[in-house]
Structure formats: C-alpha cells, structure tokens
Image (cartoon, rainbow, N blue to C red; front, side):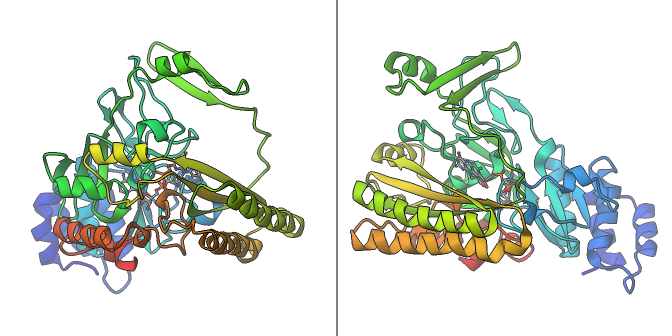
Length: 435
Ligand SMILES: Cc1cc2nc3c(=O)[nH]c(=O)nc-3n(C[C@H](O)[C@H](O)[C@H](O)COP(=O)(O)OP(=O)(O)OC[C@H]3O[C@@H](n4cnc5c(N)ncnc54)[C@H](O)[C@@H]3O)c2cc1C
C-alpha cells in the first residue's frame, strides 16, 4: 500500500521529514510504477540515511548473513539500525506502507523466511546493535560466554556464532543450563512495539510481556536490549568440583577488554563445505533402553541418507532437570511449559550441499522424529514439549507449550500489538497466528 500524499504529510513529523521532503517524495513515488516496498525503502533511506539502509544493489556480504544457504534471500532493502529509535522509525515506515519484513539477529535459524525475506520485503538486520557492557547486551552480540572486563559471565549458546536475539527469545540452552537455567532468564528486555513505543519488560514493568518473551519468539515487538543476569563464581565452582571426564576442560582467556571462557571436549573435525541446514526438535523422558532404540533407528537412516546424498546427520541430547524449570519459575516464569521432571531434548541437525536434495534430506529428519515419537510413546516416555530454538519450520513448538500458555501468549500479543502488525507483516518465525 502506498500512502497518499496526505497520509505521508501526516506521518512526516514522526519520521523527521519536512514539508518539502514529503512533497518531493510524493512526486517521485509513482503509484502505478512502484511497488510499495520500493517506495518504503526510498523513504527509509531518506529518514535513516544511506549508511543504515542498503538498497539494490545490496551489499552481498550482508545479504549472505544467514547461516543456512536455504535462508539466503535478497530483500528490497536492508535496514541496519544503530539504536532503538532507528528500529522504531523502520517499523513506522513498514506499517505506513504495509510491507512485509523480517528481523535478523545472528541469522542462525535454518528455517527459510524466519530471519530473511526476498524482494517483496525489508530485512531489519540487528547486527549493528551489538554493544555489550556488564549490564547490557545488544540483540546481535554473541554471548556464548562473555565477560566484560569483570569476572562474570552469562548464559549464552553452546556455539559462539548463534545470535543473542533468536537464542534468548527461544529459551537459550548452554552447557551449564541444568544448574544455572536458560539464557532467557534475563532481568529486562527493552522492546520496540508495533506502535513504536519503547518499553521495558521486567518483573515489575510489563511483566506479562516479560513472561511472554522468554520463549514466545518474535510475536511481540523487536528487542533492542537484553539485560542479562551474570553468573558469578561459576568458574570457581567448576574448579572446586571439576569434571570427571579428563577429556573435558575449560579454557579461560583473559584480555584487558574481555574475558572468554571456552568449554572444550575434543577437537572437532574440520567441517565439510556445507550449504543447507535443517534442525528438528523432540523431547522425551530419560530411559536408556529408549535412547538405544532411538539411536539404532537414527543411525540406519543417517547412514542411508549419507550414502544417497552425502548429507551429514547428527543429533544432540540436552539434559534437562527440574532445577532448570525451578530456576525459570524463580525468575518470573516463562511460557515454555516445560514439565518439572528429568528429561532430554533431542535435536537432529542435518547438513547437505545440493538444494535439489532438500526434500529427500528433510524427509529423513521428519521420519526420524516421527519414529522417535512412536518409540517414546510405546515406553510412556513422550513429552509434548518442543524446544523452539531447535524446531523445524513444519513443527509447532508454540502449541507444545500447552493451551493455557498459548492462550496467554495470544493475549499478550493482542495487548502489545493490537493491530497484529507482527502477525500480518512479519515474513516468518513461529508466529502465534499460525500456531
Ligand atoms: C549449529 C547450531 C547450534 C546451536 N546451538 C544452540 C545452543 O547451544 N543453545 C540454544 O539454545 N540454541 C542453539 N541453537 C539454536 C539457536 O538458538 C536458534 O537457531 C536461534 O534462533 C538463533 O538465534 P539468531 O539470533 O542467530 O537467529 P535469527 O535467525 O537471527 O533469528 C531467529 C528468530 O528470532 C527472531 N529475532 C532475532 N532477533 C530478534 C530481535 N532482536 N527481536 C525480535 N525478534 C528477533 C528472528 O526474526 C527469527 O524469527 C543452535 C543452532 C544451530 C544451528
């Protein structure tokens, strides 16, 4: 939708445009010739400047910022905000022109369209909002473990290049999560909502949104700052208690500006040249016999698909205990609905090279989790919960949080985004409108 000159004039003060600029813009935008997204990009560039808005021909390095080749797409323009105010302006323009958009933080989701969009829309790339200080963390920073000149660290992801935004909004599992909880147990989220308000969500302010953001993903607004809890003394605890496996170790690298802690088990093999990725979530109770059966099924399928396509299939088992759930509850709760029992989260990850093999490769993962579900059900070990950070595009993790939590998430989304901009204009993600 291209706004009329009158609508443009009405929006101008909020966009920081003067009358002459609006007149000149309105005369440039030929409704018959230009799609709304093109016009929206032109306005975005005028309002936010060329440094922050990349239009065609796009900087290919920024376009390629998604981890999986299957997600790489060329939007009409890429907005790289430097502040929450810039995010608000971008949302204002998107809403004014009613164009599609996607938000990308680390770009690590392998689900096409979640953090990417083609020429029909605008990509908001959060990579320049990457400031870190002891009390703040930008949405794009990598927080595998970050220390900021002080001997503290925070819960992040298990590999260093996963982005803060997607990780935390989905939960965020780290090796020490069974004892120290998920990354989503933050103190505060700074959010830009659909109506461009800057709000804080924490235990005291907007506590319903605070709860919803800890697993509810991109349904409520764009997060521009995360205030993370630091985990004091964790390194000391590890030193005291140690690890029983001599192959594991912790590397502590101390610099003047940052201190990094690396958790090391073994030297991984050099990764093959891989282009396409997909992951898939599953959860079960702990049962060694079941694990063996699930492994047997997985290995047969993994071998066959490697033989036919060269695809590399792995799976990860993440241990979850009641302490993780209790930790979350003490920190203001979350919508995840994780049962308070010992359990494991299974993630299949599959990497392959040829896009022509997409269907056959993905069908193996789908078949694997389907079989795992029936094996788990047979032994009374199935758990409905699906970890959103590891869920594939055809799974429905929000639904697995349970009807009460889902209903509450919808209520929060309706309150903070009454016109449902994030449902209607956002390109993808696990949207509540589709759960
Ligand atoms: C190899 C690998 C290892 C992984 N390891 C872990 C792990 O150890 N622990 C774990 O918990 N997960 C892990 N994951 C899963 C990972 O957390 C998710 O893929 C997560 O979505 C990645 O975050 P991102 O910011 O890089 O993603 P993006 O692809 O940038 O974003 C994912 C979603 O979040 C939305 N989003 C991002 N930033 C914002 C924001 N600021 N405001 C609003 N919406 C936003 C996007 O629109 C998109 O819908 C791993 C994934 C892979 C592939």
